[in-house]
Image (cartoon, rainbow, N blue to C red; front, side, top):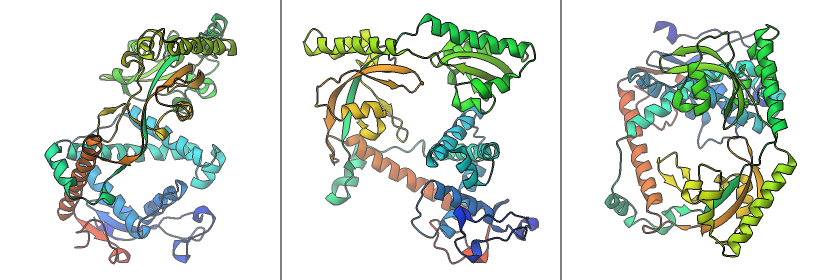
Length: 462
């Protein structure tokens, strides 16, 4: 512990954040000093560089602070360390596959912030992309552990209808939640047929990759980086990460879990996403880690036009009263997520865990939102094409089933919205109290520069 209580000298390259240092205190001269331990929480130190790194990330994402970031940021880091410590005690685990997926999502988000330019991202972060990715793995693993720890703390919290009514009974109108405009949408989807010649082309490519690996002309990892069309794994040489059977496409999982020789390449596998070849890395208990190369057949314009024409014909028949949208969707749609609900789209609400058929416009796929925005309730759109969440070209007609205009929430129409408000408040109160109680029983030490801060949680200064 004594080691943590003194300054830790670190030779640093001085690079002002975003071109200029905020002030002299924030600047660092080339080849001089110095990082510094500013907080100690339990047996973990928080460095000044940790704070600056978080500040830089927030700036990249356009985040605004509600108070003094010099106080808010280190406290946020300290709180995360409390959750992480408890997660370790409670043996909370996250999978490598989940971490890898979140790493790629974060990198893709950052790339979007800088117009997709890898070079600009590397300049912002002052690191090559490979190093950014490596450092993100630990960060994302910690973040997921913290999230799961929080969920565990509040998993037993629920509220009754009576509690919801009491909470909102005397609340002023201007404090009642406003529910934005929501829509309910039905779709019929058709996936254009891919020509045999195109399927054979893709399979021949995959057979060629297999031959090159078997002959030692190229490694599987190199070919995956060059040719795989799975953006989430191609950068890692096709590596998926340790994953359970249930997290993988069923056809992919069947082949992956049957592989026994890491030197061999699997047969060609067709999944929802396209065609793959797979190579085993390791098996560990009920999980497997493999690398793969994904190739997606290209849909011809002629096939798209045929599917669009077929859907327009179906829409005309529905308008003519020959059958209803609800009757057509289960029979004619090939979208497995909606065909059994008469075409009705739905989403899982991450915060509450319940399923809803109501969407705010920004939560719909953009192609569907653009079309639905022009429809009246009960109208059916012209056919259009889009890329679905599995990366495939599909053709769709949409029906606006219902539009609920933006309004103040009411107990009769929006009980779930109001219940979520109360439940979220109870959960926040539980987590806040847990942090306060945890601080009381954990050793903390702050640099004197932070002792005048107004913190969210009491008890840091002892």
